[in-house]
Length: 345
Image 1 (cartoon, rainbow, N blue to C red):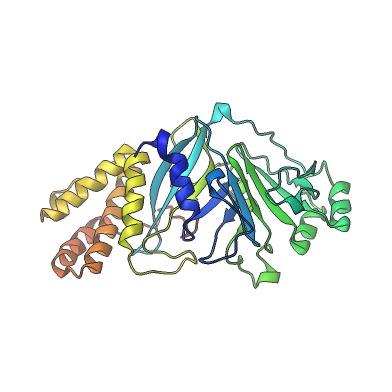
Image 2 (image 1 turned 180 degrees about the vertical axis):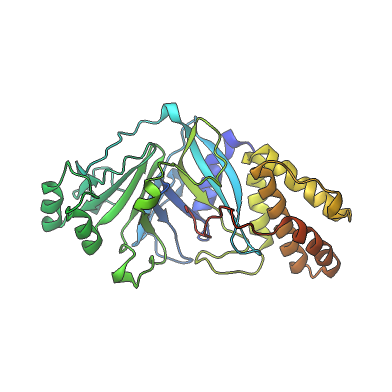
């Protein structure tokens, strides 16, 4: 697989896979697009990387300078792992106007659905280097309130704008140089039982925004690149609702192809070294763990994946061998940073 030649074709195929998810966002502000099997499509133009349902929409484009970075991360749950493909651009090529205050952008003429193009778009002023996070509304009362408080931080004491947004649930629109994700569903909170709705949804988390980071430390983005969109391919052990699923060999093998083509070389090489050692029946006491965080993550995920495959194949001999390896190399440490099992977090 060639990263340069095949990225768009991969994205087209993944957009046709309901178990795969998508996001545009940063550390603390993210919009996610998800589909359900058999869900009605209002727009279905996957060749142009565009799709819309009644719950949300996505449109992407892939310039020549886009770089896919495939990665795996450790899950808090010992029988799982996370995975994704961050689609990155050189930081020097990103053309995004950073704003720290609520700003009106006018009618959203680039909205994916034609009926949304008259609605007013407001940059929430989250001051992120690779995205703009916006709300869109045609509600006259909300529009008037937002216009009144333009030029102010949404998080300023006494500013009623954020409270109105949370109460009235305008569309959220995340924009980057690679496209947009639009979310039409309610904002997670009291009106949704305190949880995010299934399917397309958004998160704006001020505590994470204050870190000033563009992405999780567990996502190995090379220096000089910034993630401007993400693909979350179907996970072989976690379903789209975050629940356990029976191991899916097809999903596993497909992502390993992405990882071999687009993953960090160190990570891929360490995983293959571990798999070879386990298959050869070597004792874990003779294995020297890598000194890097990325390498140690590779060891842990290689062992977890081997265990899930062995369980799927009912290979009790291999499972017994793996238990010794995992006892030595896959133990959770109290000082460890592990993200929750959720795309974009």
